Image 1 (tube, rainbow, N blue to C red):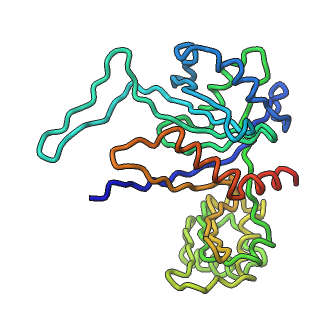
Image 2 (image 1 turned 90 degrees about the horizontal axis):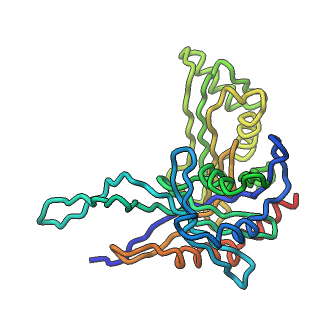
Length: 300
């Protein structure tokens, strides 16, 4: 029996910035100062309920010679849908005592140089809006923060240098779409008009044909017209898969937040611990090039 399990987790990157009244700014928020205040509190005093969600900062520590910080946020859940069973016995529900909760964590890596956060995507735990609300719940009368997405924009140069493997476009309303100079889109809209449809989903790819790519000039035209502001209401989503000969990545043409994926190997029935996750996040961010790319985007 295989006693190891592989778990793949996605991470997204944001920059912590402040508000000026009701206005969003690009002024950096100091999470180190926040940690200095909140970190001194007891576990119980760290628990805050915001918008019906209860949670706390479980632990935080400086890492990589104090150049980064690792934070472990824990959402406290009173709804337990967890069961324990053996193959030959009935399932037993995990009941919670009055003072017990199901903990669902979100691990964050913080780089104070540009106030960058690498946030674990964990369904059922704190998302970005939940983290933002929790942090600001300790900031009464002080600067409030927001998570400003760091976008990895796809330029025409990226399209020309990479290899397009798949394009996926969903139309919310084909009658509102202006195909412009795209010969491909003109033919698609003609076909939709013949069918008299309003919605459509177009997915074009290479399947398992390795070494091939979609025609570059056509792809550039498709991307440009899909992102044309006049078509904002006509297209609900658009994604492209690009390869750089080493790996392929899927890019959202409208809202492509810079992201990473980490594959963890953990013992079956074992824990994906905070320390193990943190070490792999540091490796991805600091050693494997993500920090350099993030800094380059922020300097543009």
